[in-house]
Length: 138
Image (cartoon, rainbow, N blue to C red):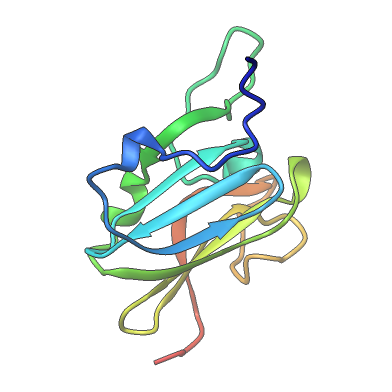
C-alpha cells in the first residue's frame, strides 16, 4: 500500500508546541505558539521565512526549509507575536508580517516595490530580519 499523503499527519517537530495561530501560503507555513514563538518552513525565497540562511552550493541564499524552524529573528524583538500574515507568492514578491500583542507590526521578505511599508537602502530588494513598520495598530 502506497501512502499518498492525503490523510492529515502530525508535524513531528511541533508535537510539544501548543499552536494558537497557523498561516499558510502556496509554498510556506508559519505556526505561532501559545508563548509567542514563531516557526516557519517551506520555500525560503525573498527571505520571507525570517531565517538567516547562508549561501548554498549554487549561490542561492534562501534555501527551502523542510522541517519547522524557530524564527529566531522574531524572538529578538522581545515581544510576543500573536499573528502572522504572508503573501501567497514565491520568488520575487514573497513577504511576511508579524503582529505583536502590543499592536506593533514587523515586516520581512521582499520589499523592493514598497510592499513592506519600510524604506530599503539603495539596491536592497528584501529585509532578512523583521523591521518595525511605522504604523500604530495598538
